[in-house]
Amino acid sequence: MRNPIRHGLILLAFVASGATNALPDRVGDFALLDSSGEFHQLSRYRQQQAMVLMAYDASCAASAEQVAAFKQTAGQWQEQGITFALINVSPEIEHAALQADAVEFGLPVLLDDGQLVAETLEFAAVGELAILDPERLTLLYRGPLNGAAAETLTAELAGGAEETVISPASGCEIAYPVQETHLAQVPDYAEEVAPIIAEQCASCHREGGIGPFAMDSHLMLQGWSPMIREVLLTKRMPPMQVDPNIGHFDNASYMSEADMQTLVHWIDAGAPRGAAAVDPLTELEFQDRRSWQLGEPDYIVKAPSLEVPATGVLDYINVDVELPFEEDKWVQSVQFIAGDESVLHHLLTYVTAPAENFDGGEADTRSIARRFLEGYAPGKVDAMTFPENTGVLIPKGHKLSMQFHFTTNGRATVDETVLGLYMYDEPPAHENFTRSVASNFRIPAHAQNHEVAAKYTFDENVVVTGLRAHMHFRGKDMQFNVQYPDGRSQDLLSVPNYSYAWQPTYQLSEPVMLPAGTQVNVTGTFDNSQYNPANPDPSQDITFGLQSWDEMFIGYWTYHAAE
Image 1 (spheres, one colour):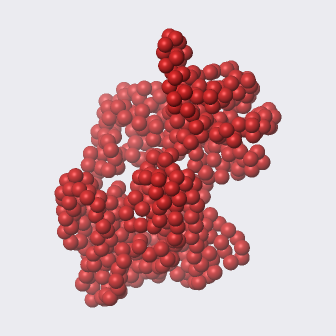
Image 2 (spheres, rainbow, N blue to C red):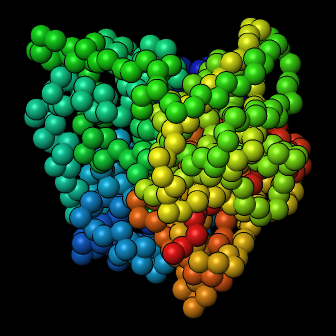
Image 3 (tube, helix red, strand yellow):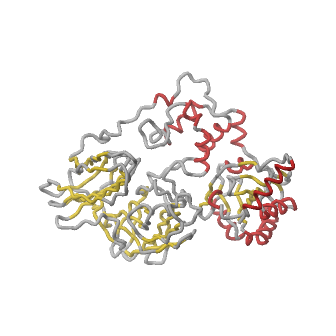
């Protein structure tokens, strides 16, 4: 690691001598998936001395020779704490071809389909290098693979390069057609930018919404534009992102590369207001978050009033609510209206038998199937409808078991949450179940890539309709895979950049039929290191626990029996 004392002495020497060399240019943080679906974020490489990226385009005649030299250089420096990767700068190259290239080269190939990272790094030619400092988020060198690049790496290892070196590079020129179009004609705020915000962002980023600021006018958007650019380039927003190359989901958040380019290029142009007389964002109207979206429910469940103190740590609260039904009922849709969104961390609801001792749903690490109704988390304001011709059965005499998790915020309050249940008039063809697939684990202190796996084998034919990943603050990624009895394997879901704040049940666009004997696998990685910005305490070994600073590893499979 960089010697901070030596680094400080160098800075003092520069000040004392009156040196005027500029500090390295800041590039800001960014994140990309690679061709195998791995997530790479510059700031998450702070444990490394440097990251070296080379602009790659397989269609360039010189690329094979360039990659060979780059790979040889990587072999010389990697053991000294320097990360090497290729960044694809040609949107026309198929991902499958890039995956094959990554295997052949033994180097990750980062996917920059919208060219926004390449633009940020100002790559001009294929084969050009960018040497980056992940700690300072700065550019140390941009240019060809030559002696100047080696000198920059040597200086960084010796205590930190103190200026950005730019060296002209030659070779296949990189074209940025969308950027050139937007430079010639800046995207129009009213016609191009505001509609993207209205569709992708404004439902949360509004007055009274869960977003930290409202996007309800051009002025607000312009003021927050640097932050918006950062969260787009680091893939923090939009939330609920999954790997788009694995499975397809009705409720996943996908922002097209074209929309990303429009927003970022507009911000880079200064976020101009344009000539429209009316600001479209000031005209947006939203449904009252405390209204019933599907009309008056067939039955409203009123949870008991629960007092939440101003401070302290609260255990989970398990509550049983008796239901008055004199016959079996089938739930088609459900909507939560939280009593106090500011303290209700999450709520899980299950249909349980009269004498069943409900344990809260998450305390059992075995693979078990339950009549899981639905869950609530901040931001979940939309009613949820089960897949066509499926529903949750509430047998006569059964109750609703609810698990509340509250977090205090300095203000005492009372939560009075309600649920609206919408019933089928006639029983649907299939009963909806949710199976938790989990395992025991122990995450060592400071472990940056601790792998955990769980599996279960279905003994009946089932149709999977939804998947949900659940970990806590140290969760890094999670994948869902099936192995069929005939030996075939299929990936269903990958959450490459897990965020504890944003993990719904992802509804498969096309349900997947699993024959009896199919093994379902849940694999994932925890980051218990200091380089995980969400980690409460990297010095502790971590095991399963209910509180947020403990950990969980559960993959939820929503399914019904096959016909």
